[in-house]
Length: 217
Image 1 (cartoon, rainbow, N blue to C red):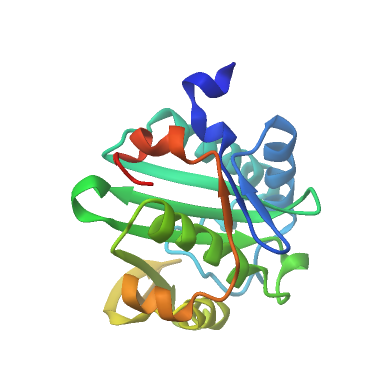
Image 2: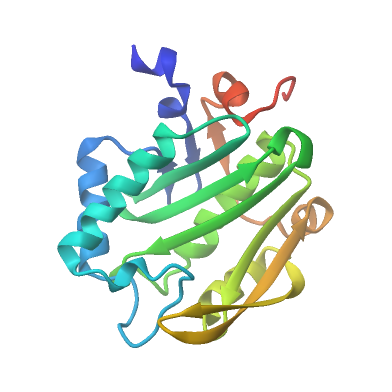
């Protein structure tokens, strides 16, 4: 079976309302179509890389290509787990957990998006809780980092619920304009105090070497 060679295909993160997993072909197609429908209002850009400015068909294709790229370039020293988020079997968004030199640094980063019609229902908080549980409880991470552009109030609110603390600012150029990114950092001790969403991990053990860790139980 393919999972014998790529056990990440069998990894599942479940919360009261959601399941996070690597997508099959049908789910990847649904994710691409969801991106084509829209992820945010066109007058606002919440991402440092403005991939959502692409025309709908190109935007959909970029989602598929990015998924394949991250799988194809995966190494234990540089990985990004791009999990499709499902509610009742229906694709509603994407949640990424990524790290470089995780075996030494024990630090992860997160990124995510939801289809427009699925926003404002608390799913962002729940899917972030799932990957933070994978990082801290499953992989024994020590820190998680994230960020939110000025004006990305929903993203910042999700981080605050999980106990992230301000970690400085940095400036970038997006759409030809100067923007401010507010960096955020979550320590293990703060995560333990703020964890409120129950999360179940299945299929993690055979994946551990791919994350660059061993002896985690």
